[in-house]
Length: 490
Ligand SMILES: Cc1ncc(COP(=O)(O)O)c(C=O)c1O
Image 1: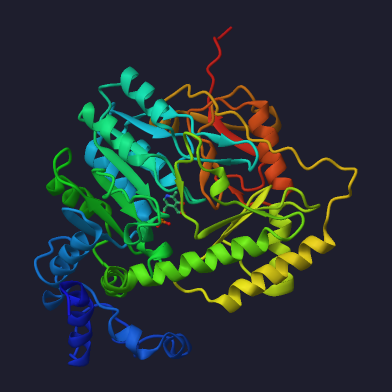
Image 2: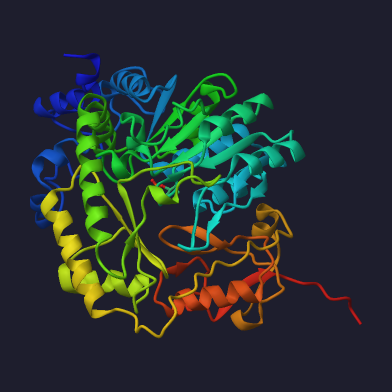
């Protein structure tokens, strides 16, 4: 038995529950007896018996010194970090911690523009100034990749005083940049590299996958164990390498941003997921990669369907890829991605990870089987047969809007005096709210940016296609909140 086989946190919590203590503490449902019976029966007594809080025998995520400390140390060892912090507030919480650990008001942080909304939230909370790097756009697929080494070098030359560089690695679609080279150049300026590794918990555990943040020498990585590593939804880790960042500061900030009522179900699930990844991860991921590659090959035999593979590698932004992500381009069919998503739901009870105008994304994970993959192939063959484009039509041209100009810092815009105006009359004004398609939650507009006709057309196109455009106070999109303009008094 190796050190990684033990689960101090889960075992400790389970033992505590098995002793059947008489609880005069919260949660008041007291092992489920004080809650709605239908829900109790559905969830099960075991789960409710470990729905506990930080009483003395169970340690405290805010000041770990017992079973949580031990579990975090084992996780650090497994992820190749100096320190691992458990997050019960998803990778969003871990990302906010990373940014607020290195940036204060007015500090610069270099970030790609296609970032998740948690990064923009942290920039607003911290008062940092974002220096945006344009991500590489794939004009064929209509998706954003990561940032290139060249663009990072240019950003660092112009802003050597930045307090951090944030990289998304891998992207939602599983594409990664040359992170090791990016880290090397950032470190030559003594600038810490923070990695949004929401979609890459598994990559650390298999050498056929892109390098993980810790393997590439990054300083911090916010990693969604819950997305692809087998823990429960909302549980993530923040991995830290000491040197350019202070683990003590990270502990203080994560504590400031975290609930005091930390869920032991989530924490325990992190402990067991770490054990499984560290001990059986390689074999399990090997099987997952094979399943995904087989499926990719079968999908590519279907006329009108393209499942992206290693042929997209070799550009500056597509250094490596995670083959367990199936990016399925449907732009040669007569449906858009959202219609394909709905068709799969209606006809085959299949739920995809996301759809956009031109693609659907299916993730293959440790939880998949050959039978399930065959159903996906069968469903898409049937769909493609019934929805071929007519020969005379050109395939849809892929369109991604230009990145808007930032006129005000996101924080200044967020707290500025604002007014509500009609959506159709908003071009040229500075927006005071976020607009994004969720998933993946990447902003089309962020507070402080100048709205263009092109943005408005893109938002309308996504809304008309039925895609989940979110953000503004007015969910109907008849109006938008913009920065108030002060006219001279006549
Ligand atoms: C790129 C990226 N970063 C961060 C997050 C936030 O992760 P979480 O949902 O665990 O808070 C997501 C979630 O979808 C994401 O796609």
